Image 1: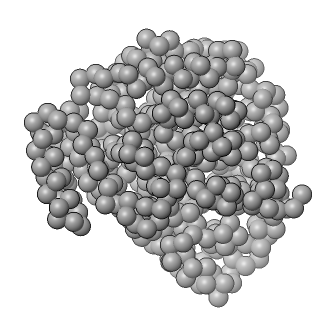
Image 2: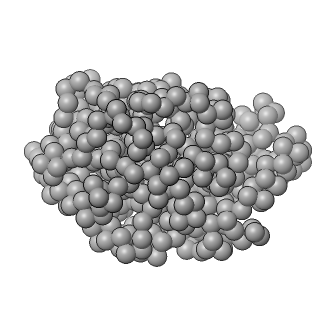
Image 3: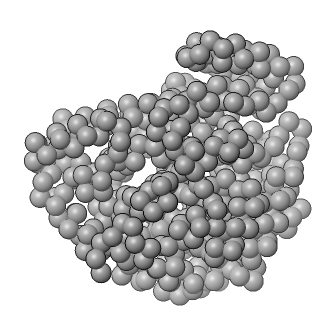
Length: 472
């Protein structure tokens, strides 16, 4: 197979030979100062890097150069996304699954995990619990099971989620993380008003992929890897990539992930809306030590920084798989979205105590949403609950053009402040409210246009008076 980023065949746009050559090239040139300087000079243009260029930066272990990489990643994140961090929560609908994935406790052979599927009334209860926390954006999750979790069930759940208006709460964006499916089903998801379609590759190494997915429809590497092309053919503008670091060599996964981003850009004119960077974690019958490709916190942070430099326009996501300490390190290197107050079990949000028997993975950051919001602000980040772009039609190539030009901040910054104001009034603790009001007052002065600044002040008053859901 020959490498071709414009090919629609998985083994050509994610080409094993090209990845292995890239990894070898990066290792060989990791101390080539002239080459690395030229790559960093290119990166400073904010136009991105190729998978091979970025791989050289990842391989470089010179301390001074690594500091330059980190500083550049931090600045690029600020240039494109400012100091905002978007907040979301996962909502697990069902853990019924027909696949045999070796790294996931939902695998078919796990007979001691309780199987559960939410009814629409239970979905409603979960959504109300999430709204009462302050969430506006969800990522729904479900195992692959055509009998228990057909596309009709997912669509019914989306309809239910959007229909719930509890007190001042409303879920304004539903992202969907479900198994690879058909163009027809992607059209149905588009028509249901989803935000981003998310699908983790898990590993780009086809040989290892097939070993890790021994049974079930997910065993088909090509069908899974080509899913984003079908999603875009089905009219979904925004797609989210990700690998599960630890399943294979991180250098291989890093190159494959960027090749996938390059492919989407080359074929569809729109790269990934988001890239997620989860690591293998302990779960019901899963021991991460069973996988010999684990990576250190330091390398994990370096991967995030290099992704930010290589794909400057993409949103980057870090979940509660990671500890507060790791999240604090990695956020400054390019992350723009984090989960907060997450429960990874089916029906977990309505339980007083965090249930563990149906968790997909152990949560390392167990803080409440209020505590996460408070922490972000103390670290000078604006917690944002904004969903405006999706609802204003700023998706796909329209979003990307605004993001690449830097104009998106004219919308995102004021929207972040207004949605933060809603959270402070409706859900925040007294301490969080006090910190937040000071942050809003300070950040209003950072709005570039006086007219926008005046409009924001007027709307903040109206929010105080009970109005909700203003957006630019």
